[in-house]
Image (cartoon, rainbow, N blue to C red; front, top):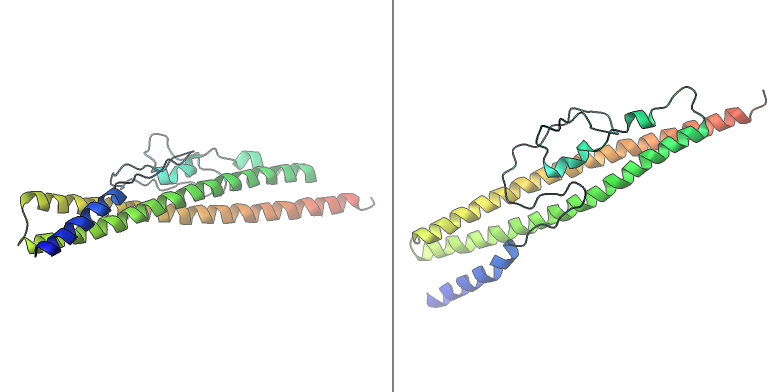
Length: 201
């Protein structure tokens, strides 16, 4: 029994440092690393694919969704009757810049999501260790029960963060897909206008 306890305590100590590693900061709209439950992910009211200024600044926006609060580009990229090929291509370039920004944000979210995933796995292992100790000690003392409670809370927070970031990344991919299609259409329109302008009058 002493040997088993020694192994379990050794495993617990070795894993403690892994679970304590905080998430790194994420540049523009950092993904938070504090362990707070997330029940307030802002549902986006704006369905356009280029901007979300309609998100109220008074509403708490989950850091994983901060990209939805970026400046609305709708007016800047709206095609107008008098736009020529160069005008259209300039607006396509604006969209491509937004795509680049969103792609960078996705990388940051993916990194943070992996860190939360690692933390979740570490907490799961540590909880199993504590549960084994509790069985050996026929339930364990109050301190052990409190540790197990904190581990379960930490695992719940990590699981929530994983879900939120997974949804955000999925929504971001949809956003980028729509913008990419828009760039394609703008390029086609610019080519068509050039073709018409080149025709003899």
